[in-house]
Amino acid sequence: MEGLTRAEVDKAESKDFALGGKPMRPRDAATLILLDRRGHQTFVLMGRRHASHAFMPGKFVFPGGRTDPGDSRIPVAAQLHPAEEVKLAGTGNRASAARARAIALSAIRETYEEAGLLIGRKGAFATEKPEWQEFARQSVCPSLETLRFVARAITPPGRVRRFDTRFLAAWRDDVAVALPGGGPTNELEELVWLPLAEARQADIPTITRTILDELERRLSDDPQLQPGGTVPFYRMLHNRFRREVI
Image (cartoon, rainbow, N blue to C red; front, side, top):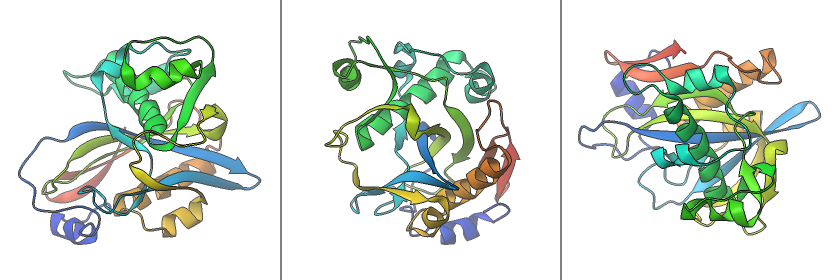
């Protein structure tokens, strides 16, 4: 998608997004790319969104959603690696460790809500926030140390929904509990583990395919996803979809 004009991006994404939205500031969002290495292949977890959704209807996506600033106050078994925290915190007036924690914990919460997967360590955990009560019932304390910040993308203008999304990656081994009935929101109709090559050929949004391409390149150079790796950042600037590096 790098270098495309706004008109070209609109055409490429016309089946991914409802177009024609009023001008709006993108909202912070967090997405988790859960990976599973099997032999020489890496699989990724994806789910199909309901066809009635205005944002990416019927598409296969990663679990994710809006960032809840209150998630930054959730206790954790282990903090973000410092190199990851710095990149997630961002720059400018809004940069803070609390913001980085909120993004990371929102990705973990959304993965539970949409896929029924609780990422963390078995052990005592307590909070008054209702959306985290399943972690307490399952005795899972969220853990951030293995999360890796792998990409960022801002939805172009002219959509009915706009998000400033941080894509984080984790491994299937980081899942402490998998609920047999899935997550409580039922936002994803179908959950599947796909090899990276097959995932790129699935019915996915254009930006998701771009992120998968980026992830595959990083994994080829850095199979363990070491902390502090370079992070591609996609956004519309001066009528061109640009790729920068964080």
